[in-house]
Image (cartoon, rainbow, N blue to C red; front, side):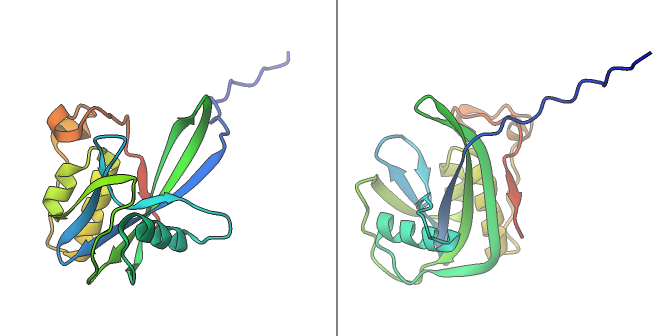
Amino acid sequence: MVSTPKPRRREREKLPIERACVALVYRGKKFLLLKRTYSRNWTAPGGQVEKGETDEETARREAFEETGLKNLVFIPRFKRVNIYTMFRGTKKVERHVLFFLAESKSGEIVLSPEHTAYEWLDFHDAIKRVRFPALKSILAGAAQKLDPEFKWKPSESMLKGNPTEEEHGDWLPKKPLFKNMN
């Protein structure tokens, strides 16, 4: 008698990959957040990797284009990635967003047309302001890197996948979508 192999777990769908890089810019114990023109979201400066660029070059270029900040000092041994799927028109893609931590000691903010406002917020307020749980966790990790005494704990509702509207907006992940790249 011939045995049939057991069915395999559903294999992960192979999707085109897009790469983007973000600079978590800070001064002292405050993060810089930008308000997008096309949504109510606050985020850090970042965008798509261009051909021939390194990830850090992308984060540096995007930070300059979106804020006018020059002379950012990137913090060694801090890199995080958030991986998720999204649609580009009707095409589904896997997006890999790399986060770097960068200090800005001075410089006036000059916003690009992509943004309507900016704020320097202390670590807790910055985490509270962003909507996406993965970004909240990445910001908390950056804050702890900068200040080992910094404490942030995700709410019980966030851990259970049921964040309140006030806590996390209307975007709900099924599981954490980030990992430490160090």
